[in-house]
Length: 245
Length: 174
Image (cartoon, rainbow over all chains, first blue to last red; front, side, top):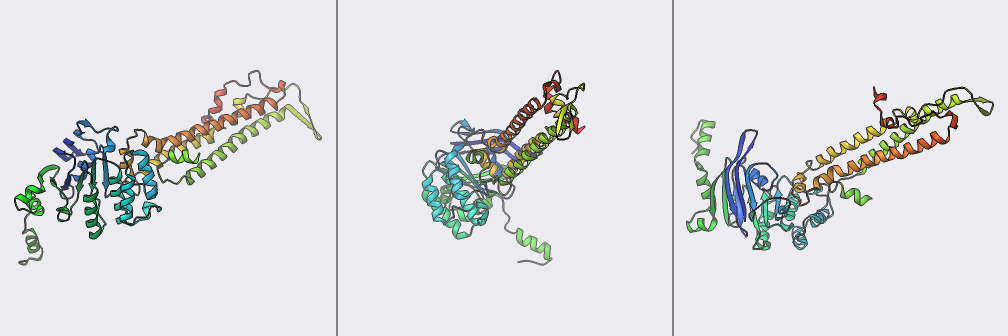
């Protein structure tokens, strides 16, 4: 169980996270949604210990330290690989540092996406870089795989394929926390949705509960965010001075 | 050696530039140190002799040559500069982890506590240690020249007085 209890995280007196309490049991695929600047990335970085914060994050009751950090992996749209190193070089690096690294999964996924293993990653397309980033996170042998906007730059077909592959390869003990703006696209692949706004958790629901209520994920998100459907027409009216509808 | 250097460097980083800079620095430092000593030494040694045709004869009644430390004043300047340049590599190595990608996230997530230190500071520190070892070896060689090429009566009473000043280069700078 990954438990996040962040009392406060701020950037130069600007609050980024407040009273965030979340727990993630093993075996879940969780979507983390929120507008830009809501705190999704900050939340993930705090959980990984990459940013200082007030509070605590525990994994199976123990604080995250060098002893258990390998149980967490991270794929980020900012990329965390070494640009000058090849895919094969990264495989060797991960194998050396993460004993649970799955060579089989790495090989299977790189073959599936047809990724070149002997070119420096800086020379690849953005889509390929993202694929490598996600593959490293999935192959590390972690129980909790945190993904922050990992598919930026990938076309819709690649993304669809990836979700399907993801569902197919995940072991029952693996949890994926996926931060993305592509709500409708991941709606069928996640089991739980966590909504964050201005650094606070404003929604946390299982997709089965939504199904029972006959509600779509996107509608739940809009409802929670108090989305105003007429904001576009109001804006157009204001800009053009004409009745937009 | 190549493997060790790679293990102590950010993954994928090309070491060609660093190696070239260090090689040039070590060469120039050696030339500077030896040149400083040889120039000073020959200048002082010449007073001990007077040439007559192709032969040199010992001069009598003149003071001995200065101490070894006095003859090597400022010889370490190049090695200080080299050490400073090599220590700057630590910064460049750290920047490698935040340029082009944020591989610093990966390095900081590694179970090995010392990974970041190993890949940024360890090799520069080793380079600095080797720099001073080279200087020590050179100093040993210069001492050998000083003792073997100078007639016994031409050496001062305390040839190694203030020997630690071999490492001093601030007099030269000031």
